[in-house]
Image (tube, rainbow, N blue to C red):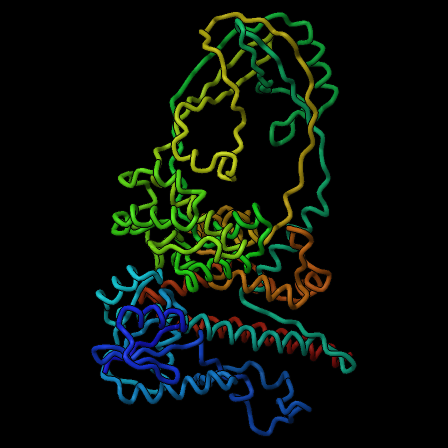
Length: 624
């Protein structure tokens, strides 16, 4: 008997559809060829609570839980214990799986194609001490074509052991830090009259710190006025504008070379106001191109949906998950990758056809698309555990989708469609001029071929804001042209933007963009980030549920309670640089370059140090 264990019922259903159901059972289906398919509901097992590892004689509270005592910390399990989740359905399903494992000659791990999916099934096999052959089913979409490919290309499960160890390492390290530091800090900062819960999380705390730091920057920001001069010039029937460029040694500039002296601005205007002509110092026109946008990663589409529709990160993830699981018209969503496997390029015609059937408003674009075009997003060398988010070869009735599903599916489809249109071509022009003794510069852009941008048109948030898209006349060096007007333009420096859930997800993924230290920025530029595509939305939701973050419209801010918590948490815990390094170490565990125990020992050393500090603080308070 070959037993297939899926991560969730929807995956089991898709596998059964291809294997062919013979008989349905309670929590499993018998299929043709001696195959039996069963399923989980996400993780069925969870880490034992600290009470399991602490002394039996510790007093209990009214709820029957052992009371928190500083002398019992830190809690470092010698042998880690997993328990069935306290849910009747989960316990019944585990009993079913246990019975099936006794009969199974071969097991196929059908967890999702990531670390957690690997661990989710592997930990059940270890829990029930299954020792026979195990294979791995690996697909990133649930459409029938992808399922068939997965069935035909099973791999040894042992090949993915590193992913299981990395997921296990994250789970254990998060438990160690969260359980120990939450208890230590809560005890250190509470009084006999009132307990003050200080909830600490390896990813939650630095995420909260990111938002609080941005809020503080905005709160303390003081706008500074600055000035520029703009000239209106003409050549024949063409008119264009050019802006003043300060020369070396120009007084009144700030560190960003902005003119902040109003007196100097007035002086320059007075000197230039009666200018009649400008001499061309340099004139260039260069043919340029913009390549097709890469396929969506989860962070990319969460940012796009936040900016465009105001969706929360969790809303976007849930909607992507529904398109993947329920409708099977989008690929696996929890991806940090913007690239696609080259083997799937040949599916383009079928996918385009499915888009046209599902979203009729895009049918005309699918007819214009050229499936032979191969953009840079098709690159096997840059594929990680999952590929980018794309439509599948399966179609659905548009009317059966919710409004959110329609919006997200259209985003995914337009991004995919863009891959099959040519590059966007344009001419970039620049002119440098001398007006009296001052230099002015004009830039322009003229589209010569819209290429993939026709996929977006007015819809697009893809259209980048250009410095100038004016059309510049063809001029020769030394030409003298009329100056029609000179004017002073005043502006103000702007505060950084508040985080939205989308931009916070992007900041968590590309943490190097919000880190100022050059060495740290260089270290993090590979984009390890904090959290994972599967957990980032849930982390933000949890921080909101705990009252540490709050939403105001599209913007998200740290609450007073959240800021107060950060004042009490160790700097190392809220530092995103160290959290990102943590993620990097897990990648070394996954690759077999670092032992799991070695990784955990480093975490224990840090936790021991912080618990000792909390104990010292409590002793100091008691002495007073």
